[in-house]
Image 1 (tube, rainbow, N blue to C red):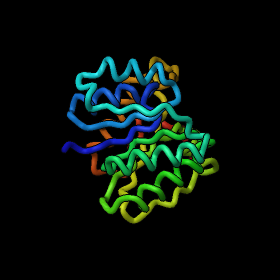
Image 2 (image 1 turned 180 degrees about the vertical axis):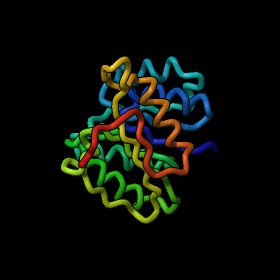
Image 3 (image 1 turned 60 degrees about the vertical axis):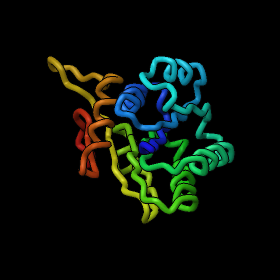
Image 4 (image 1 turned 90 degrees about the vertical axis):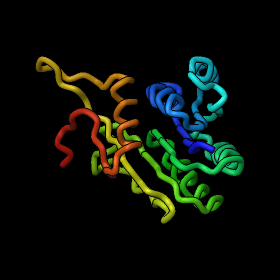
Length: 180
């Protein structure tokens, strides 16, 4: 059986990551709010039989916990790629705790953060279980011809994919302001 990747927020800016993982043969469970986008993601995948989708809003903490627990009971996760905004921090912590509680296997968390979330004043302190290898991907900006722009979906997905295959615990995609 191929490795199982749980991808939270995978129908929007991380949809390219989902497609890359699918092409690599991973079994993927993609969690996102928009059921229509999830359907399109599955239909456009090279191996749609290797993608499970769950339409779920992580700000509904109780429902999120129930559904994620069902996912990990069906198939333990090897890797989790998660992009939670600050209103989802409680769900992120519960997800980590629940994975550690329901499976013995070690797993890897790639926590995707926007640049403002990485600022020390805004940084969320996640309590990572001992069974988890924790990595952070911080999304910055690009500077072109003296102007700054947001990262494209492709640049974000490529950065997350790179982190997945990297031994580094921190990867910055693009440039960041001085975070002091």
